[in-house]
Length: 376
Ligand SMILES: *Cc1c(COP(=O)(O)O)cnc(C)c1O
Image 1 (cartoon, helix red, strand yellow):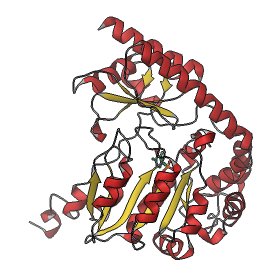
Image 2 (cartoon, helix red, strand yellow; image 1 turned 180 degrees about the horizontal axis):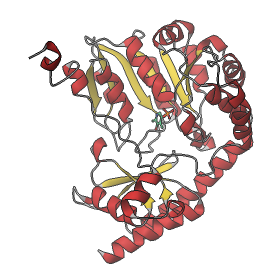
Image 3 (cartoon, helix red, strand yellow; image 1 turned 135 degrees about the vertical axis):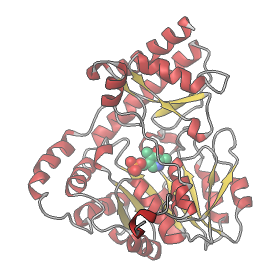
């Protein structure tokens, strides 16, 4: 036997083999093929995307930036960072651009964790935290939730000398729970200064106005804080993969050391820059989301389905009592052309996460749920 045939059956370290690959929401084309449906009639409420699409300004910027795409993008993202710095009231040197904000989460793990360290996060929080920690072979410290959200005192109590990085999502995905500003600020004050905290604000634009807080002031106050945000959700640029982190220079420096070369594209940078300039679009997205939340919540109540109050653009709803409920109702919805998100991989097999769509999309989803429960 040649040496080439004597390859190991399994590649990579054990901690790599232990990674569960990320499962995204099902693409419309795949559901159309599988269930013999017309793609135009399928409603996708599975990935917390903006049902309004993107700002026309962003679309126009993308078309213009096509001409520059034969060349490499600006590796430093100068124009976008300048615009973000201006909007956020921080220096451009405090910003790290990411290929989506998931990229930022991974960069934080690569820069700050080794296989001798631990990353700490809450049960029922974003699954990319698990992957980021697992991807560098570090230990997971998973703290039980409090009412589906973060239990900050318990997270503080769980910090050990091994802990080097903490992830907190506010609002949280997949549950939609929200931590008030004073609780979060208290928490940040008590985290030891050598432990970094990623405050993941992917849904910040959807927080109701009276609950909003100034996390940029916290970045100025805490040298161990990274705030991450994305253009994937309210800005409607999920397919272009654009996100960013804000942190003081020493942390920003290490994040940029592990950042992949040219991690954000020419089209993505141009679209994000133009999207920042359309606050009206964000306000419209906010209003559509609020109305849709009320529409879905009322329908869940009418169907007797428990749901978790959400500050995001999605709702976690309990669709049955048995462990097969999530999968069963998800299939029933798929057959009726509605793509929701099963969350059994989060340990929530009785629940589905449903993104808020347009009024019409929500109505289609509600009708499919009614039909399912009427028939079962
Ligand atoms: C969607 C989401 C993100 C960001 O996703 P990207 O598309 O990679 O920017 C980050 N955190 C949470 C909690 C999310 O739900």
